[in-house]
Image (cartoon, rainbow, N blue to C red; front, top):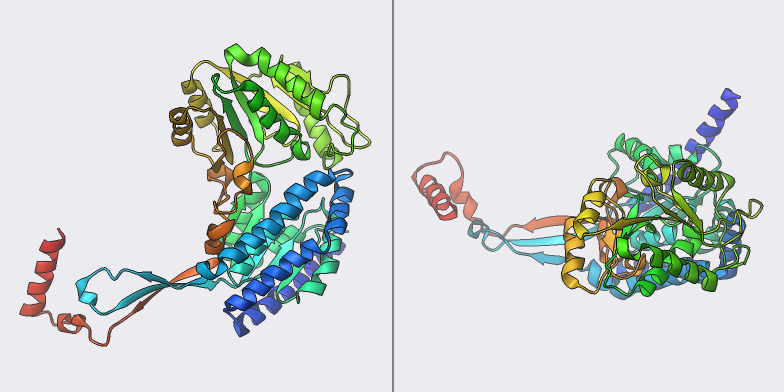
Amino acid sequence: MTAINENLHADTAARLRSCFEQQRAAYLEAPNPDYAQRKQDLLTLKRMVAENVDAIIAAINEDYGNRSRHESQFAEIISVTDGINDCIKHLKKWMKVQKRHVDHSMFFGGKNRVIPQPLGVTGIIVPWNFPINLSFMPLASAFAAGNRAMVKMSENSIALSRLLIGLCGRYFPEEKLAFFEETGGVGIEFSKIPFDLLVFTGSGQTGRAVMAAAAQNLTPVVLELGGKAPAVIDPNYPLEKAVGRIMFVKQFNAGQICTNVDYVFVHETQREEFVAQARAYVAKHCPDINHVDYTSIIDDRSVQRLQDTLADAREKGATVINLCGNQEVNLAQRKFPLHLVLDTTPDMIIRNRETFGPLLMVLTYKEPAEVLEYVNSHDRPLALYPFTNDDKLADLYIERIMSGGVTVNDALMHVAQHDIPFGGVGPSGMGHYHGYEGFVTFSKLRPVFYQASFSFLQWLRPPYKGFATRVYNLLVKLKS
């Protein structure tokens, strides 16, 4: 059995390396696609999605067991095509050579320029939760910057992977774009390829392994990880509005979103009202977990993880509230009711592990300082969500709590903005993409100095005699 596995890994590595060498050769032959070619690549990328909407949604639904069609339309189709359109709209401006200031009179007549150039062949490792969004948005940045790309899909996205592999050849040659299915060990071998840039979205544990493998080739990485993203509700903010916006994102994709609200700080005077408002929201908007609009948990292992989290909380004294009333977990369809978890303690799983599901931990506070102390005593989160109409209070949370991104008075929505970067910080990730920052990430901003025909430096060459000495001494005085 070991020999068989070794042969499979060898075959996988050879197949990946062959594609990489093909793309690298194509890059070296034409290393800097012009504006027309990049625009065409982006338009073709958009066509690949737009012309296959129903097939894509059906494949994602098959992989999930049940994925709300509307959620797939919003998070996968609309966001991606809109993001590609934004790239096309700004591409010509992004590609312009930048003029930079020449810093010293000694370089009089010289010119500084920064030239955006493609990195070459890029690798993208995609998770299962938003498989089109998290593959095609980095691809939009990669193609805008003039690169080629290889994409490794998740083992939980088999139906979609096979669809994309079958479709890709109709839109792009393999030396431009190739998709790969996870059949076991593919991710390991993929991370070992000497890409010019590697983008990974997923868990922190896997992200560390990817980064370690990439380090062997000094491959730069963009890591989009996760963590426990907090929301905090100002007692002067309309509570019903805050609850509605938070519960919407907790039920969206069954809570399986890396930037989701993992826990919420509610003022101690509003705890019971928060619970009542959450019950009212669920009763109105998602009372039946068996409805087609209620997305399934991705696999049995994840269902078990959520069940274990709740069992641990109950056993250690937490108050667990099933917001869907008497509905229990539907194991056959992997449908998991929305829950609130209150009265938690530091030793509980839910305090220490990202929930990544329809569980919301509720903490109470008296003063903002308590929120600052708690959040800052834990890993830096991927997102922060202050709900307040007090600008000074919002600024306090933004200034004192470092996170990947922030949405004020809502959740998730900063990720949907194409003109601001998306990315984590510390344990929640590194690097950015989306919009101009995505173009920059996938480019080499190449600094070039053009020397003038006459150079003052010719008078300052060794041996350093009187004139050179006087000039250097003068410059030291002037710059001190």
